[in-house]
Image (tube, rainbow, N blue to C red; front, side):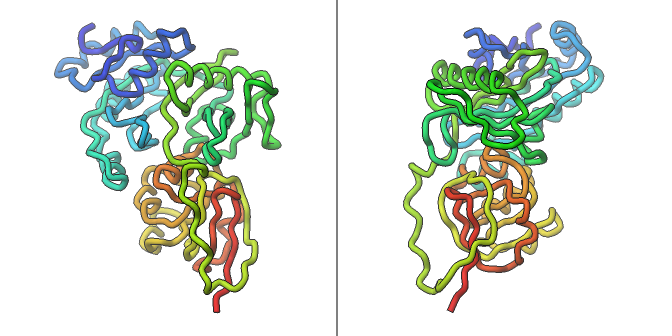
Length: 359
């Protein structure tokens, strides 16, 4: 093979995600093996696809982006590029093309956060795992910045966690203590949480700096699917919140949930059911929805804060909110029933939503 590069040999032309996975593989981490189509592959790579798939084995594959701007220290571009899971052999070539060309959405996000356009995207092809559970582990608390691993887990594939479609089980793990389950539905066992936590800490030690690690448990093995620097400021990094407006005479508690991005913001609460409601949202309002996807980025960029009914502190909405520097609260089941248009204060550090009466 000449176009595709073995994952463990990935270089800068293979994108940030592939470079890190290659480093993890060489260090002995359990990473699904794969091949990468680099940004400088040129023409004729299609002829090599059958050989790549034969070498990997199996009948179903993961086709994943590896952008040169992806997974950076300042911005993750979480969910902004195209990834396809459970791709059958006959469709891999099509999905590789689609992933390599999917830069328009990422370009819009780059503009929002003041980053240069994403340019070209490398593509990773790996055999598809069949996980019993999957999730994300942060080696720092994403809200407080405290040292220790925060783990979120869902049954099956981890994309349900990032998309906010499932409410995750949550664990906290420190090297000098047993893992602590923070939710009633833990999804994984204490022993599995320990293995995940240790893998995340080992990745931090190898790569340097706090890490956001995507993992999966399949066939009794904890696999590392991705590792990138944690982006977004924690509560300890944020500037102090502004003092309450003197026009506010009293407050009442409206709802609470999981703190997901620190800080306090005030604005009119706006309930958005879906894409058809986007025109109702005005800059500076508090976005309330069930969950977000990359298509919601323009609203997040204009929001004072975001509240979701589902998802965890490691969901798409939470990650993007932290990168944009706005407060976020997830897992607020009653949020869609709050009074639309009311003035609220969202405390993303405490996880509370309060309503304000004005003079």
